[in-house]
Image (cartoon, rainbow, N blue to C red; front, side, top):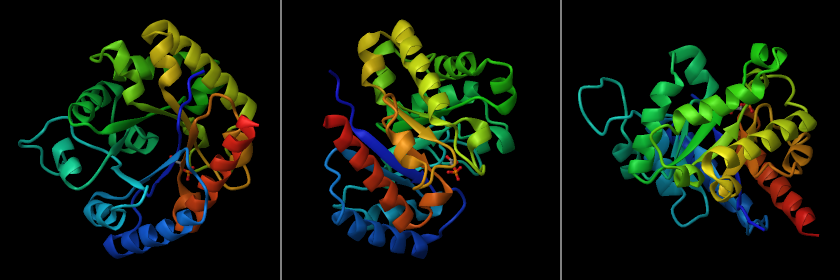
Length: 263
Ligand code: PGA
C-alpha cells in the first residue's frame, strides 16, 4: 500500500499585507503546536509582497510557504512578472498554477501553465496544479475528459515519473467562491476516474504516489466528508482559511480523518 502524506493549505488570493501575514503565521504556528498532525503537510500561499516575511515567520515551523503564480522564464524583459528563482530566494517551496481566477480573469491557458510547470520543477518548487471543469463542462458530462486534458497539457514536456513531483488540486470551477462545495460523491467519482486514467498515461506507480487535493468552498462543516474520500489526500482552502484559526481547524479535521483511515 502506498502511503501518501496528507496536505492542507490555503491561498490568500489578494489578501493580507506583510504585517497581517506575519501575524497570521505566528498565530498558525502556535495553533498547530496544539494539534497533533504528524502526517499532514501544511502550506500557505501569500501574495508576492508578503512571501519573504511569511517565510521568515514560518522558519523552523512545519508550515511551507508558496506563491500563487510564477513566470516560466528565469529572468528577462517581462514587466510585472516574478520568476521561479525569485520565489525560491523568497523562501517558497510551492507554487499554485492554473488557479481558476488566473484562467478566468487573466487569460491564462494550460499551454502557458505547461511552461510554468517546467520552470517550477527546474527550480525545485512543487507545483500545485489546479484542474477542474466549468459548470458547462459538468452539465455536458465531460468533466473527466476536461480534467485529464488539463493534466496532459500541463505535463506535456515532463517524463511520466515526474508526476508525483506535482500536487494536483481538483477545484471544480463552479465550486470556487461558491455557497457550497461539490458533493463528496461527485468528487469521489472524479478523483477515482482521474487516478485510474493517470495510471494508464503515467504508469501505476507515479499515479499512486501523486497527491490529489480537493478545493472549492471548503469549510469546517463540509471538510470531514471531503477529507474522508478515499482518493482525497488533502484540502486546498480559500475563504475559510483566511484566518489562522480557520486553517488550523481544517488541519485538525484532516489529521482526524487520517486517524479514522488507519483504524
Ligand atoms: P474558496 O476558494 O474556498 O473560497 O471557494 C478556493 C480556491 O480558490 O482555491
